[in-house]
Length: 340
Ligand SMILES: NC(=O)C1=CN([C@@H]2O[C@H](COP(=O)(O)OP(=O)(O)OC[C@H]3O[C@@H](n4cnc5c(N)ncnc54)[C@H](OP(=O)(O)O)[C@@H]3O)[C@@H](O)[C@H]2O)C=CC1
Ligand SMILES: O=C(CO)COP(=O)(O)O
Image 1 (tube, rainbow, N blue to C red):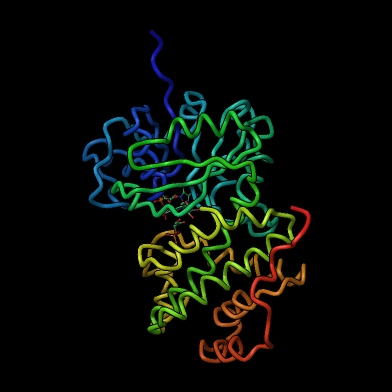
Image 2 (cartoon, rainbow, N blue to C red):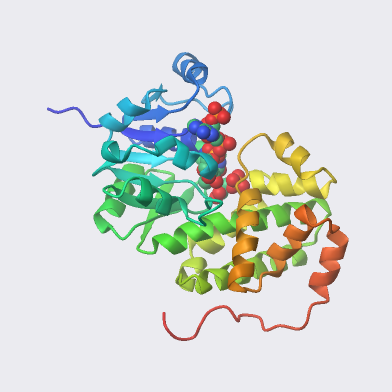
């Protein structure tokens, strides 16, 4: 009998660790690649990640490694969980090693200069691979602690979606499929910006009405932007849109929310990011999103407001005043009535 082929997870952070465990709990052999040998050795000997998801036991089926070439050679299915700022650096120049492999991006960000989503970057780096993305309301610690969780795998390649579903489905984790890779991935990247705003509002003691308004108007804004880029607005009503928006804008476990909360307490952006100490993709996404919205002339008052606070010297009070006194608008104006 041939031995089952291992699955790779690239990234030694919170999400890579949560996914490596999830796969191993499903009986998969897992190679978790990380850049730091000390970290890998600590996981090998103590069965705990010393830097991320502290207190979570790492399953015996997870083998930490720092040998990227060997990992890519050995595995056909590869989950990518490094921050968007690092993804291209990690995999660039490995086109031939990745040919024919199944690449699944877990990364929720947008490349700064190109405005490319991570699966588009993967397509560029590895044009002969099969590509999918995973996105949804998926806080790493909750996955690792077996809270009931659902996500979306999206790809034009139905067979790839089915293989990913098969690898990940388990007692506490359910995977829905979608053919709208662009919409699913865009939803995951955009919501991080609104989580920063929600964190700020929470620090200021926002009421429940305020939270409802914020999340719903965020959904309107991100969908309006996505439609302008040609995405299907219906995707934003699913787990990777409204689902992820709700969880990230409501939970102090979200790192983007934590950065926002610290800003609301009066910390500078640098201090807020440093205090949190993990990846908060929303800060970079805000910059590229604001520039793109200006270029496409999409009305995004929440994005413009946060940008004015973080990079334009405006106070939160000034921005709230401007948002509340804006001209009257229609409620659901962001879903075209034809064409989808
Ligand atoms: N955490 C979560 O709940 C979720 C995260 N995601 C997404 O997953 C992606 C990864 O986030 P997450 O794991 O949480 O982030 P973390 O901050 O927890 O970890 C980041 C990891 O990436 C590694 N890394 C950073 N730069 C490089 C590099 N140049 N080369 C190799 N490795 C590098 C870090 O290594 P080192 O420790 O050595 O610095 C660390 O292992 C993000 O896009 C995030 O939005 C998506 C859904 C949920
Ligand atoms: O994407 C996430 C939940 O779905 C995690 O959000 P944070 O990166 O803000 O922690």
